[in-house]
Structures are given as C-alpha cells and as structure tokens.
Amino acid sequence: MKGKRIAIIGAGPGGIAASIALSQAGFDVKVFEKSIEITPLGGAIILNATGIVILRKWGVDVNDIFAAREPQFRRYDGKIRVKFELDKSLLDKAGVTGWQSGMMRAELYERLLKVVPEGMIQTGYTYINHQETENGVKVNFADGKSYEADLLIGADGINSEVRQQLWGYSEPKHLGIAVWLGWCELEGADRTNIIIQHNQKYQFGFAPLIYKGKNCYEWWFVEKCTETQEKPKNVMGYIKERVGHFADPSAKILDHTDPSHQLFRWVVKYRDPLKKWSKGRATIMGDAAHPTSPYAAYGAGMSIEDAFFLAKFLKGKDLSDNASLQEGLQKYETERLEFTNKTTVFARTLGKIYHGLPKPLAYLRDLFLDNSSKPGKEIAKGYTEEAQSVLKGILEE
Ligand SMILES: Cc1cc2nc3c(=O)[nH]c(=O)nc-3n(C[C@H](O)[C@H](O)[C@H](O)COP(=O)(O)OP(=O)(O)OC[C@H]3O[C@@H](n4cnc5c(N)ncnc54)[C@H](O)[C@@H]3O)c2cc1C
Figure 1 (tube, rainbow, N blue to C red):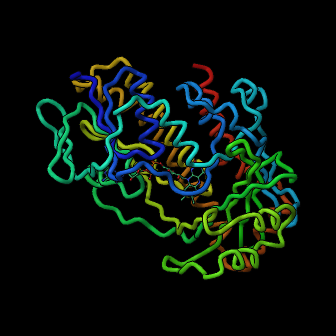
Figure 2: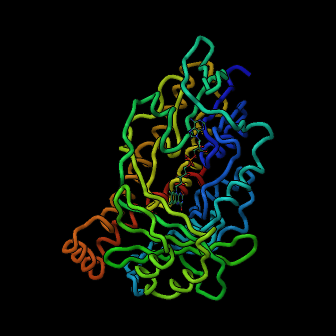
Figure 3: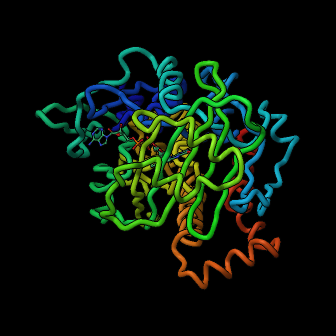
C-alpha cells in the first residue's frame, strides 16, 4: 500500500502503542524489534489518566486497572508536603478514580499486544541505518535484510540508533541517581493515594496496584549514586537500613517483597533535549526522542501520548506525498516537542534537588518544603498541571 507504509523500530511501550494507533488510523504498519521475544522490563510502572483514556480509545482493556486517587509528596514521617490540585470534573469525564495508578509492566504489554493485529510485529530485526530513495525510505537491518516504507519511526529507546542517524551521536549522561523498583502483594494497608516520601537523602514511594486480581503495591527507592556504583550484596538489608523507618506501611511493604524476583535496580541516564525530531521521511518518539527520568513516572505514558498524536496528525494522509507528510510531522512536533522537553527537564531537576544538593542546602530545601507552599506549587505545576491540560485536549476532541 504505497503512501500508507510505516516502519516502526522497537517494540517497547512506544512502538507497540504506535502500531495500534497508526494501524487503526488506516496505515500499513510493520514493527521491527531486535529481541527475539517481546519482553518488558521487570516490575511495575505508573500510568496517568491520559494514558488510560488513550488505551481505552484503542480498545485496550484497562477498566480494572485504576486503583489510586492522587499523588502526595510527604516527609518521611508522613507529614504532607505537596498535595496536588486535581480537576475532579476532568477525572470524572475521563472515567477514572484518580490521576495515576500502578500497573505491572508485563500486564501492560499483554493487554497492548492483544489489540495489535497479528503479524504486525517482527522480532529478531536489528535496525542498522536507513536511506531515502525515490520510492520512500529503505530501512536496513543486521543480516542484510531490508524493508521499504513511506515513513520510518524510531521508537528504539534511550540508545536509539534512529535518533543517532538523524541527529548525530550524543553521549548518554549520568543523572546521579539509582532507582530500585519493587512490588509485593499486601492486604490491609491504606490504598487511597500514591505516596512519595523523602528524608534528607532518600526517596521511598509506593502506589497501590491490582495484579491478577490481587491487591499489590509497587514501590521505589531512589538514592544518589555514582555511575559505577555496585549493587550491595544484601539488597533488602541495604534498603531497609535507609528507609525502613519511613511512615507506615513502608516497612510492611519492604517485608512483603521477595528480592529474588520482585526487585530491580537502574542507574539512570539522560540525554540533552533535541530541538527537532523529524528529518525527511523519518521521525522519533518515546525514549528515543525524550528519555525521561523516573522522577516524572511518565516516560511510558508520554510514549503512548506520542503514538496518539502521530496517528492524529497523519490520519488520512498519502505519505508518499512529501509535502503532506511534512505537514503531519510538523504538527506532531509542535504538539509534543516542547511539552516533553519541559517534562524531562522538570523530572531531572526534581531528582537533582532531592538527591544532588550538598548537606547544608538539603537542610534549607527541607525547611522551605516544610514551611512554604511555594515549592509545592512548582512541583504540582510540573507534575500534574500541564499533563492535565493534555488530557483535557484529548477529551475535548
Ligand atoms: C526505573 C524506571 C522506572 C520507570 N517508571 C515509569 C513509570 O512509572 N511510568 C512511566 O510512564 N514510565 C516509567 N519509566 C520510563 C519508561 O520505562 C520508558 O519511558 C519507556 O519504556 C519508553 O518506551 P519506549 O518504547 O520509547 O522505549 P523502550 O521501552 O526502551 O523500548 C525500545 C525498544 O526498542 C528495541 N530496540 C532498541 N534498539 C533497536 C534496534 N537497533 N533495532 C530494533 N529494535 C531496537 C528495544 O529492544 C526495545 O524493545 C521508568 C523507567 C525506569 C528506568
């Protein structure tokens, strides 16, 4: 189907979401994934209401997913520091009980893959490079295989080769933090909100989630770390020593976690934001375009939104018509680039403020957080305010 052929590189949340959105918009989509099996990273993620609304529009079953109401930033002993102002009528319109909720990554993949048309994802294809031809764009893979499309979308993550070919090499930078992600089954504890607690050095947060019909929590522990810092031998002992005294149910959550298969650790990297994503017959999305610190809990959510807007602005177009394709890609960038860049900078800055300040400044930060509403307002702006306007726009369509 010349004029409708789209090749997507990478079957992470972004690439899978784009395959659903663009095939539903009438395109002839192929996804090329380098792994032999499509496997999510371990543990859980948080999705916000916008992600849920988009998934529902695509026919993904998410009705039993939402478990929490609102995020709260708290001091380690439970004192609330930032309570987010949420537009309740917006959430009602979205059909959700709150702004964010936890979800196991494996379950997100399973449910997304159920609505991907059969045969659309090809595994074992490693993108090497691409060239523009008279007929479109030729995508070359390892082992000498190739595919011709009208549009190439790089959804190949933070180390994107598509981004590199389009915009040159850039060094991934160390963000200065390590994130531990765990999950556990736990009944009985308060499941109303997503709680993000800090003491002077560490963050311990948790979100209720439902997994296979059971009440669970996902949790995360964030600490300052060097790029080469090794994982400690006794991981639970290490974490409990640092945050085991945080307010209830922190200790219970840690006690119910089995580190052999319910705990994962990342040393987080970032890249400087780009000023442009699309060039010729290729563009990028998700972490390939805007790798995001877990402090935003929004990287996968933003990749789902990218997919939604790509389909919105390309729908009905003959992609072999270059002027029409460029118009669609320009609209996609106008909608997404500034917003996602702002979000990534916000998430990075928040991580630095909480984990990168020397002790005297960290002391002043906490004094300020405990006695002024100003930092809370800034955090709320970056964390939920602008993201709520994305949701509003989508619901108004
Ligand atoms: C600790 C941690 C916690 C997080 N928590 C959250 C959260 O709570 N909420 C949230 O929304 N986000 C969260 N994120 C971010 C989220 O995981 C990412 O933003 C999301 O996975 C990005 O999706 P993606 O599809 O763009 O890229 P990826 O998930 O990186 O997928 C890229 C895919 O491309 C494939 N690929 C790579 N190179 C090639 C190639 N050359 N050829 C073919 N295929 C290729 C890879 O194998 C992979 O399957 C978190 C991240 C971390 C590290």
